[in-house]
Length: 384
Length: 127
Image (tube, each protein chain N blue to C red):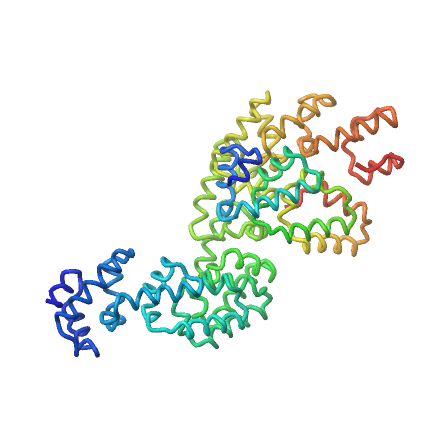
C-alpha cells in the first residue's frame, strides 16, 4: 500500500525500497508509513511543493515521514522567530531538508558566526534563504573567502551582498577567485573598477574566460575600441550580463535605423554610455518630440549627435530652454551650437537680469560664459 | 512609485524611468522621497527635479548618505549653488565623492587653478 502510493506519485521502486529500509522506517508499520506519508504529501502540496520536490526531500531525509506535521509546523514557527517568513521556511526546506533536524540554537549560532565574519543581517537572511546548506558548511571556508575579498579591497557590505547573491563563490577556491580577478585586470580594468563591477554584478566572478571574452568581442565587432569598452562597462556593469549584448545590439541598430551612422552611434555612446539603457521606444520618441518643436530631421540628428545628453531630457525642459534661447539666437544658430541646450534656464535668466540691472546688456555670449570667466568680466555681480 | 505619481511624474515618465533603470522598482517610496527631498533642499524646482531624474533615473540607486557626501565634497571644493551644476549634468549624481576628489586632486597636481577645476566639473560632460 505504501509502495503503491509512492509509485503513484512518481517514486522509482528501488528508491522506495531503499526508503523503507532506512531506520526507523524499517521498524514502522506499512499502514503508519502510508498514513504519515499521505498527510505529509498533502500538507507540503498545500504549501506549494511539487511532486518532484516532495520526492527529492524524502529521498534525502526519509525520516521526515515519521515526523509529525505538528513538528514541522513548529519548525516553521521557530524559523519565523529567526526572521524567516512561512514561504521562506518552506523554500529553505526545499533547499536543504536537513534544516528540519537543526535546532534553532544551531541555526542561531551559525547566523551569529556569519555576523562575526562580517556579513550584515540582511545578507545573512538572504544567503541562508538562497543556500540553506550554509548552515552546515565548514565556517572556515566561508570566513577565508570573505577575508580574501576584504583584503582585495572590497567593503564588507559589498562582500555580504556578493556572497549572498552568488553563494556558489563560497565553493570556489581562493586561487580560482584570484585568477578571475586577475583576468579582469589583464583586460584593462583597474582594481576599483573590478570591485565596482563585481559588486553590482557578482555573477561575473563565476564566469569562465570564454564568457568574458565573448561579451568584449561583441562590442569589438561592432566597432568599439577596447579602451572605450572598459570605460562603458565601468559606468554600466550590467552590460556584462549574459546575453545582454543582444539587447544592446538592438538599440545600436535602432540608432542606425533612425539615421545615425555607426561611427556617430559609437561616438554618442562613448559620450553618454547610459544611452544603451534607454529603451528603443524612448529614443525614437525623443527624436520625434524634438522634430515636433520645428526642427528638421537632419537638425535633430545633429543636435543629438553633438549633445547626446538630450536623449534623456524631458521634452518640456528642451522646450523651455529653447524658448529662452530663441530670444538671443536663431534656430539655425542653436542647431550649430547644441551645447546651448545644456544651460539651466534660471541660470541664464538670472545672468540676463543681472547684466540688464548693473550693466547694459551687450553681448549674448556673456550669458554662456563659464562661471570663472563670467565673474572675472563682471566681478561686482553677486553670485547666482 | 506612489511618491513619484504624487510628485507629478506621469505614468509614461515613470515607465520610461523603470525601463531605463530596472532597479527602480526595488527602491522604496521612502528612499525615493528622501532623494527627491535632497534635490529640493539644493533649491531645484519641481520641473528641474523632474528633468534631473528623468534624464538620470539611476539617481534613485544612490543612497541618501552618498549623495549628501557628494554634495558636501562639491561644496568643499568651491561650489556654492549645486542646482545649476546638477541640472546641467544630471549624471554627475552617479559619481561618488571620491570620484570628484580624485578629479580635483589630479587637476591641482597639474597646476590647474580652483576656478578652472570648478568650470571643468560644471561644463565638461562628466559621466
